[in-house]
Image (tube, rainbow, N blue to C red; front, top):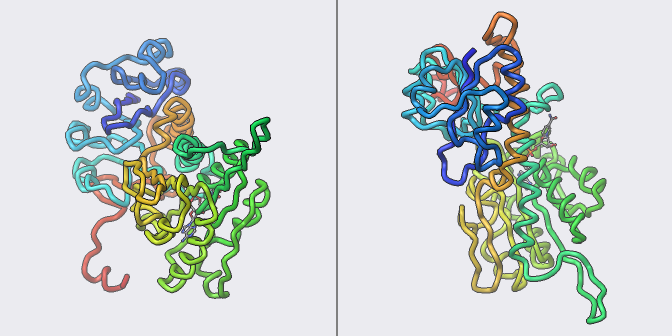
Length: 382
Ligand code: NAD
């Protein structure tokens, strides 16, 4: 197979979808690998390292893509890139399936495209789970960013000049990112409390030495709050939740929010009033900024200081700020996923495999995910 790795084009996207380590394995298995010139540089992986692992370094992107059987990407490539692909080519990456305007083009081009965000959260999928590997990094980086804006120490310090109090950190949303936020903030000496709509997270929060923020819920609400993923809650529930979280935020020094619902806008957990009641010098890092933000005042892609002295950090794509480790974990996820597609006889797409079926968004001219429902179907889904 001819496997290619284009350089990422999105501003600030410093990750790359393969490393010399994964390239070596692919070449060892008999594949030809081409890496676009400079693709790994921002992730501390120069062309020479890829060449030493057996890759060819491609200077012409379009030619490289036109010859590809399999394209490994971090983000969805641009329309011109898709246009270069041959029918039957496979594309694997984080293709943003819920908001990808190029899915019809991928289908028309007869590309078999895999959006790895759609992997089910099962034990078998764990080693390919790009959301986990990347959100773990985002959680770690969010704490470091908070420390950068916070005008005080995080740990408690006793010095000859007096005692400094430990920072109080409030974590909203305890998925993979939130758990790493808790662990990292604890390592830096902060006092941590955390909240999630899924009551099942209490045990995980407490096992990391943090306090769980309790929100009284009816049995109905408990059932609605979901299993592995949270679901959208009623407006009345969200209003009660906002009231509780506003009080906890006013007592905190740092709030790091990570609450997300797949394919939906991020739940609003902190209103402008809640920010107005926070202490000057407090920091909010909103990891949900790109999905609309957990805080009403978050500006996606920006960090700004409110009138009452609260730093609002909505910087995007935190995993790309740790591009070397993010790429190495991501590349391993992709390599493991490719193992599902590459058998002895070359490429085989087994649609009976639940991991293949769940992630395959376009195949043989058909858009399998997110296609606009026909009127009869739409009526059934109301
Ligand atoms: P995510 O990024 O989708 O969401 C982050 C968190 O926000 C979730 O815990 C969610 O419950 C929470 N949230 C949503 N709405 C909220 C609200 N209104 N208020 C407060 N919190 C809210 O989460 P994730 O990191 O993808 O993890 C989701 C779940 O999947 C977790 O239980 C995680 O442990 C599990 N998981 C399982 C596997 C596996 O078994 N292979 C792999 C990864 C994650």
